[in-house]
Image: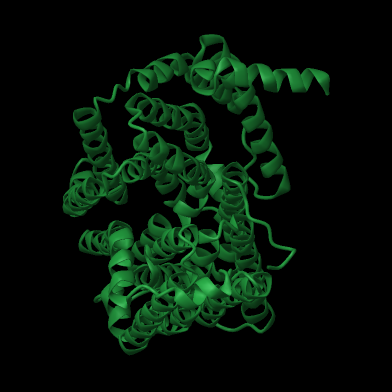
Length: 546
């Protein structure tokens, strides 16, 4: 085996994976600033439509299979059934190849109808042919990304977590470099159309995935472990049907969830386009609002999403371990602690971003009549969604995957069924109608979270008083933080310009708010309840010694 590769312990692997997620999420949020400013609002519409379709077909091609490969490879390795392990990888690879080639062909064939699906009978703004061109370009990524996912699953099964996580960072960096260089050259230097620029940007997904795949191929030389030659001759590889059955059993839940969420995102975007069009919003404004709500505001929300994703990676194995030994109290404690972390960190972060939604949106994408309103409302979805994500993964880790699937579908149905009614209701009562779709998302997320927590309480007798206790202790800190931020705005009004000074000003506001919040949260005991007195004492001790 290559000397450069080293298997990672659980703690080390979790830390590396968490850092990689934070880096990739933050890069994904920050690079959208120059991208959106170059491609503009109309380019943003094209990018949003094409990328949402790509995400759906990528889920169809790969959802759950990499995780299944990781588990199966790990199982066969533990049993020293190396031929079965390699056969499992080969079978999964062939399955993914068939799915990815089929998805690629479908996107190439139906690119034009997809463009019509989004824009329907809109005469102004982006044309269907622009979306069709973008869809055809981004479909090429389906020839690479699924192979990359399978390779990552294979390496994770061998516990090479650091290599797999590093490849995610490489993929994101290469993708961003290609995207920004490509759009700058085509649109700024060569004066080509927004459609060409967006197509070049979307090609960055394929190039980034290819770079990461090459990195993994180089770093994973010699990974294939072999048993004693005498044992290897006697080993009979598992039957293909058995391997496929294992893959399906491990990935079915994730496939249903991922595909359902991707379909919902498309339906939600379509409902917003349809509702605003029927309310006679200008076509250009309708398209921009839908793209901001489905793509560009969520990119800013990634700053908060990274926290939830890191928790998901950390909590799952601990929950599974507690379930194995029958420690229901440990499961309850760990879930309460994870939800408490979101309450302690994500809630104040979200509230602070809501207070400064307009300048934050301006930093990212420039002045917009709708953008900051969408961002402010979407941050509520992000916070609740983080709690849903952590609870989902916790339930899957303790064998409640079927419940997660049912609840996910219920939440999606509630959300989708309320989209148009809420849009029309908000228009009737004088609230910007596009906020109705986000309100429907909030209701759908709350419905899902309530059902998930109710199921855990009913089956495992969970008690959620610790989270409620943290929230109640946190309220004074939130109130003082908001008061301090509002006072700062009055004393030092936010600059109306856009640039480095605005970034510096927002940074100062954020530091002041965070300092006030955590001091009061510490005094009320909220920080101790979530992090623990011993952990805080260790951190404070290190600070004093340094």
